[in-house]
Image (tube, rainbow, N blue to C red; front, side):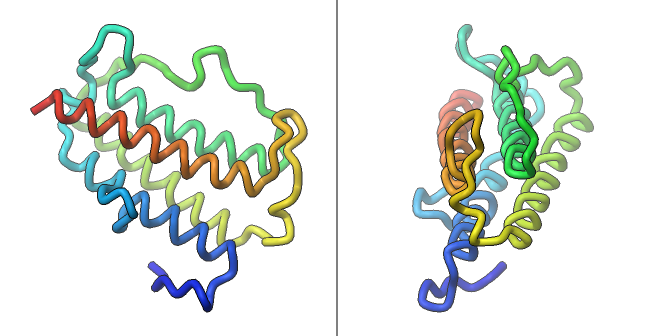
Length: 161
């Protein structure tokens, strides 16, 4: 992990730093995604605490799917958001399946960091036409998306205790 020195970083490196901090570092909000999820069991992850809400597991799968969708958009693929918005019921709630989900999240993190490391800073202003958003906005959007859902996960995890 790079040491944060804003005077020596370009915008791309600052974004990578924020993304890494939210995942497994010490972000401003005081909690990160990886540590939060490591303390959640498969039973807790698959419990629907409120009838009209998603489970933690469904939220994690949703996070993973959106990360890949945004990367694909930035690779020039026109993607239509599915009707289910990447929220799919989990059918295998075993410990093995939960560990595989956490590994897929880790893999998506590594792929994002690699993608961002190879991203050309001059492409920040490129517009993804269907959504009419710049790649810069998409990158920050996925960080905001992860933070939003981390908040949901924390609330549900408190119900699981």
